[in-house]
Picture 1 (cartoon, rainbow, N blue to C red):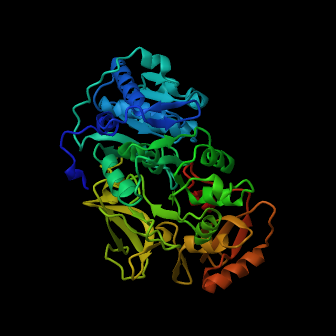
Picture 2: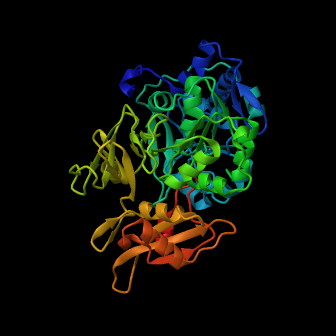
Length: 503
């Protein structure tokens, strides 16, 4: 499926919610959160009521609202209610600073802010300085919904109209408002959730990645709503114990995480027995999945982790391993419906086995970066989108991650992938996590430096780890310096912020 296969006149919320009323799923459970649950019929009514409330505030077509809310049933109600009314929701990270939030509200000129009560103090210092911000809504929305009509005709939107924004995670600097259109959510569901993962109505979905992350939005909203599956939501941060609680009590069949979370789960003594789990599909994205983590997880659960890569710009995963075709240490093959190519710094395609920047062609690409014309032009090049990731492709068509284009190190005149060195370090029995950046030596030559987090109760010296890496990789790749740390700086989505380690 491509965007052109979707009718010209199209509203994403009307499709994703309304289809269940037409197919007789009104009574089936759609969402379960920490406070209760709602059926698909309940969801449809709440979406209508919320959309009507936004219209009653004077918000109109393509006005923007910013959502900084924890993952509860109110989140999809607000997001889909806005879209059905033709208003553009902007989902933002719930773990940012007041400076970040002020920037996003100013940059987007959002007229309304939807914010969970515990996050409100982050916004109060600057809200009066924002001339565009007119309304602040704090969940739960129960009383607000009771006063609004349960009937709402969908706004007259098209498949190419702005539908929602996602701000990039800011792993390399200031976040960018990434504008997505109405057709894109449905396309990602059909290409990846149904086409690759085989998600079905009978599945129960649980994503540790939150709604505000493009990965989490697909996992917990687009995909289950597309097929009629039930979704488990969790408002708290995804610690191993919090995840184990949902895996054992709610019995999800799908679980989505990031490599750092999988590593922390495997290191926990509370990891549940496989008999307590009902998993059939586990997915990882956000960072390259070290082979050792995948192998250890398979030993404990009998389930393979499907490593994939997506982006805020492409909305969800476009390159992935799949249930019947897995190669550990790779990110798999192109998801059907997407085209990929690897290019050098001159834009020429590289040879098989060589590192090149990954470019993606697919109809789910964002329209542009809001208020950032130069970056839009350099990222969205005709039908192709630059990923900023280095990859190589083997003879069988599997892609292996080589790091970010701005993370690559040239050591002794040879390119070194930080991801490769990190994977070698993480395969050591004492290492929980590792991040590698470049550092200049006395001769001003760049060499690898590693930041290492050890597993609880384990010991290892820098020399031991250096020798270990030398035994695994070409000697010039070993980290000349190793700094032990209690934790690595990360975005809320689990991506390591290497720019902070370089500073």
